[in-house]
Image (tube, rainbow, N blue to C red):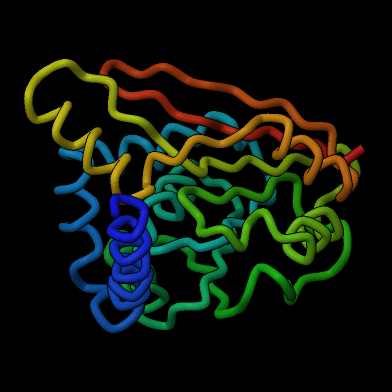
Length: 216
């Protein structure tokens, strides 16, 4: 019975997240803030120091928080997203600060960029497309030799207060705090030509899983 309920809930969440990323994109920041108890943006921006540039490609740029931070630092960053609604939100955020914007509508499985174009590719909280063979092959293709792919697929809330425990349980029930097997990640990335290191980065009340994959 529990497995049936979880399957139904997972199906509902897929529909909800699709709406959240497209038609209801204007609510994305609020929902992300609520479900993470205000941690979401700090999670996303935690990978900033892993992106020295000078040329960076972000897959699934969403509302543009990482794009804005990298642009403030003077780094050359291109953002790609399938959602036109997210593209408009990121564009407004960059324009508000008079920052250079380079936003492209497209899919990770078919990147509209030349070979060996970027020093780093980054994706924060992507859907399962990021582990698909087509996507990994495309990321490998557009990276310069020695370039790196930095992915943050999941975070766990580890705080001990009542709200934190409730949020952590919600993440677990809905599959947002999924357990990822390291060997499965390494196998998938090695098949695409990456040397891979998996980091579990402890923050004050949360734990992040960060994949560092280098193009040989």
